[in-house]
Image (tube, rainbow, N blue to C red; front, side, top):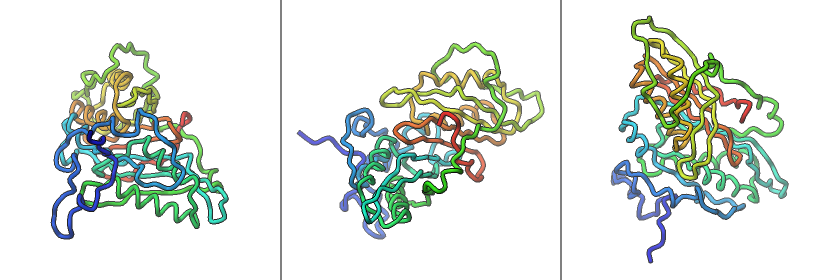
Length: 315
């Protein structure tokens, strides 16, 4: 019997292109947007908790297959980042004394892969009984391992952001609300609980506006386990005014939809972009944490600085 393939494993020496060859690693997703077998990931099945450093626990998943489902090709009409916060990072100093930090990660949307969240948690847990000289050593290890996994299967490389906040800095970890006009004030009847982009419309007879709209009613479900994912979402745009009641109904329609956080935000962006045709658009969602991690995807039509990675009350 052939062993189950480990789609999370780094490329072997045989898989890596030789210097100057121009060849791509032979991962299943390197040449075509074929969806990986999610049953081969740690998500949705029992996993041992490893407390000794192991970068092989990270499981990258290609973005391309789910993007292809919503009509996004090799050049997306958006840029952006996934902002992660890890609240349960710990390691040992050289004398064996535990150290703790809150970690913030900024993962560019152009990385070919995202990180499956349970594997991220298991990877961070592997630091628990591992000794490091200082927090800078931890940060450098995180930066190297995540960069390798996120760009695996691609000849391109880029920068990600990693910041550790030690306990002396925790006073700045305050709670904020997403700024904007809340759609939740509207008393609407909701009947759709799978994505219903037909609710989206802009009034082209009205002059263009600039608006920032928010909702705390976003709920989707994990692609693999079906567990609920709760979030708040901010939509900033310029263009003909978008029907707010329809937009709220559309956001509510994700309530029984199963997709990863990043994929939901890209679907929201693409539906608004194609149906309402704004001049500019940004979609930013902040999901509640699970396993000590929260994931906050942000997509925008025009390059700009990422929003502040500050948590909402439910995070």
